[in-house]
Length: 141
Image: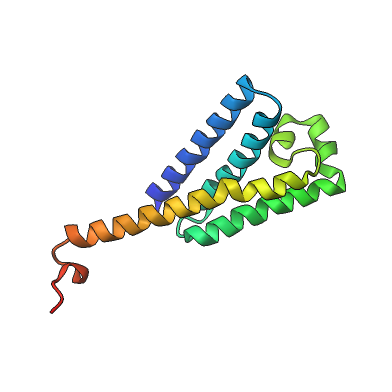
């Protein structure tokens, strides 16, 4: 479980580095949309830091749900007020509601869920073949 958390934390850091790198060299539409997508991706990876045994689809639902909750929270004006005082609050909570972000969050999560499921499936198949003591590796008669 420690290895799973460490790997997830590594992905959080990697995604954050990519997002900040894009932010440093780009602005406008690319910065906005990539930031939205990568924010959602980072939340997906972060879900595994907190709950390493979470299933990919459940983690995807948590990530998209969290992102949507933060986006709708922006309608209250609280994130905007906090963002005026803190760069961290601005990066975590954003400043203003945008319907486009609602659509872009799943773009950052769904491919990761599918990739995660694919990797798990491959490992399960490869592990069954590699372990001669496994029931799945026994010939079917």
